[in-house]
Image (cartoon, rainbow, N blue to C red; front, side, top):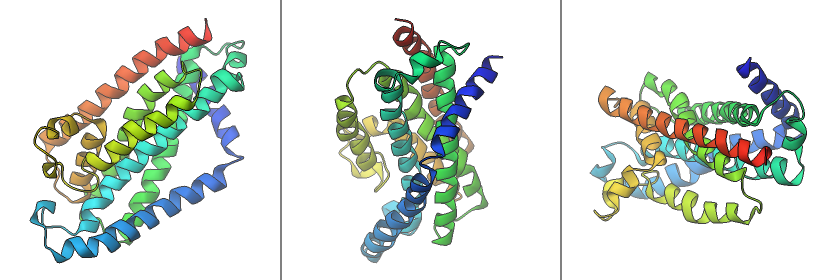
Amino acid sequence: MEFDFALRELRFWLTDHRRTWKGSTFSIVTSPVLYLAALGLGLGAIVNAHGDARLGHVSYLAFIAPGLMAAICMQLATTDSTYPVHACAHFLKIYQAAIASPLRPRDLFHGHLLFTALRLTLASAVFLAIMTAFGATRSAWALAAVPAAVLTGLAFAAPVEAWAVRCTKDSSFGLLTRFVIIPLFLFSGTLFPVSGLPPALRPVAYATPLWNGVALTRSLTLGQAQFGADAWHVAYLIAIIAIGVGIGNRTYRRELYA
């Protein structure tokens, strides 16, 4: 019964998405093309010319593509978990109307997470297809990079949404992007190996959800999967999601039953 209520909330988001699906789908398709062409091929031509062995003797395109795949899922999940949630809870008051029905705050939270998971699945599947067209995959294990990227996105969506529902002003979302999301994109192994960072900063990068997601997707697309390391990355991401869901269940209840 609990899952049925979450599915009802999912249907609400799917219905709402009918108004904007063309624009969001266009962005999902064009972003990987532009990223891979500009960074993978453009910048990659310079990096490949120097024969940087720190990339694991693969082309810069093959190195950067899975990192971008995980990073785009992080960005998409964060965007979907901030402004839409804030609008429903504080501007449009849609959540307040919903809890007048049999739906509970946790159902609204879980239903939106399901919607975010579907969006991440579509985005990562499209990205993988475009990666393959660019010749940036090295193994059939690349198919498993789709759920890996989805896990990465949800590791941001769950805690961010748990926090966003309590935010009364949306100005803090810009700070989140500037001081958390962008630094993670730049320094979590997406564009260059974490070994290129100063030694004091490497443990910080290794502790981030994005680095674990990047390392997991990269090992799968390059055919370098190792059970122990990849199992650790999966467990880490699932733990972050579980913590975020646990906190979100409480923050949604406090905010909507206050």
